View 1 (cartoon, rainbow, N blue to C red):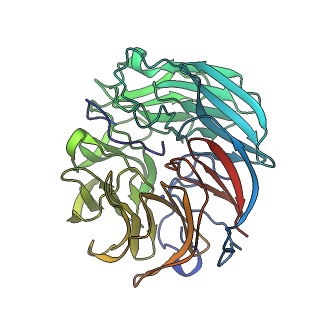
View 2 (cartoon, rainbow, N blue to C red):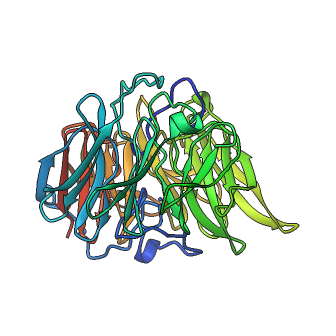
Length: 424
């Protein structure tokens, strides 16, 4: 999904430009392509696009194309003139598809059997797939709701290798389906898998062999990010127990900080907020939001809590860091609103109640907002207020998938269709 809902019976499972540009160390990007992975170039739901319109016509920005696509929440990634995503095909298959960025036509498709039976899944909110593909080194890495992990040739769709994480590594079952989006590091691709000594696993991109497998924890629906702190690359994981830093070269633990909730439903992707701070949020009980600061002490990294507050409760939507703000949608199955938090104190500085549960992207000093009812909006945010400049109904189906922005083209999907919108 973007990072789907609460899991079932187990507790496993991110730039505003110009005036709002965040200072500090940039995240690590080791994938390839204009929007090569979950969360975009740096996995933070921000991009360097410029020249976006300051306001849209009343009927909305220009539609470039639209086509039907099967069910699923997998985000669209972009590499040159190609788009990649996943969808559910029929009752028992998942499909990986390459589309033309020009008109949405299918270039190739790879489908494989992925029955739900025997995996303890409750798919009442949609059959997935939930995770977003990754493109790196000419290869496409995908994983479906049933935890079947593939490496494909990105040009042809031909399978190179695969793993059934559930069967091979006793992957901790997630009631709503597997949803960790893979991440590249050096010659490996990394996933949180869960289970005994399989908490996090790295596979060689070339042949799928296990490079390392470390730690014992129950997986969550969240996807990891890569940061650099104190001159060291770190993989940040948001599992059922909270935040944890891992050495991406070998999986060894570096630090941890608790953030627990009912069902172990830590779903949204954590945010690297500047040089040394990590933000996370979840819904349910006790839920809330937390900011931790990384420090070096005795040659090691330690995490110290800066604040916790219970009013920001991100369910499974994207969160962004913009200047002095942390911005996202708060709410699960009841009322929801957009909220801006003062990064220094955690206090809400504004709330906007004109949206249902929503995903947010940041680019060109603006926010692009898509709520679950398919309402697309353009806004700007300051520490004083959120100003909505344009707003219109784009999608008909449930729009839980985070949009993708490359240049001035926004790619959007709901559970029925995929479309390209011109934001110039």
